[in-house]
Length: 223
Image (cartoon, rainbow, N blue to C red; front, side, top):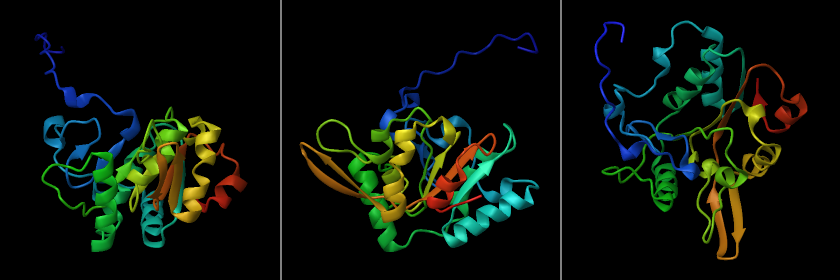
């Protein structure tokens, strides 16, 4: 446009249509995300890594401490401060999954029907970032008929990122308390009862500290 040249048409790609139940899921190292084209198609050259971040020593240290100790995080700051950029790089700090953890994560992704092609075993920590309009069912699991894994299960052994956490509904946030404490979710429907694993690191962001501190502390979140 700046050079007065015609704007090329964007290629049609059905892979750009998001799945509401799997919104925001990314499997580091595979270049695949739910409802997204592969990284090579999107022009992404590599997996997000903490080495990409210039400066920001305090947030970097917070990510390292959270990854080492299994602490949840609350990032507070103005728009553009780098909260999302930092959260996307937390999986790169986590250690590779053990054999047992890989089997657990692979089983959940296989049930959800999103196991990457040519990737029989997921070996990297997953990253799931649902939109703040996500329903309680899409977070903890559910759906018509046999329950499907929700975001907390798709982030099992990885990172669940809730951007603009105060914008999520109160019921959706309250539903996270049980998986945070027990590490699993039990979803009961007419078609049956399903127990899904849900042990993850949770990262919340907000423009400023608007979340009740007692609620944050009860969830075990480090600020």
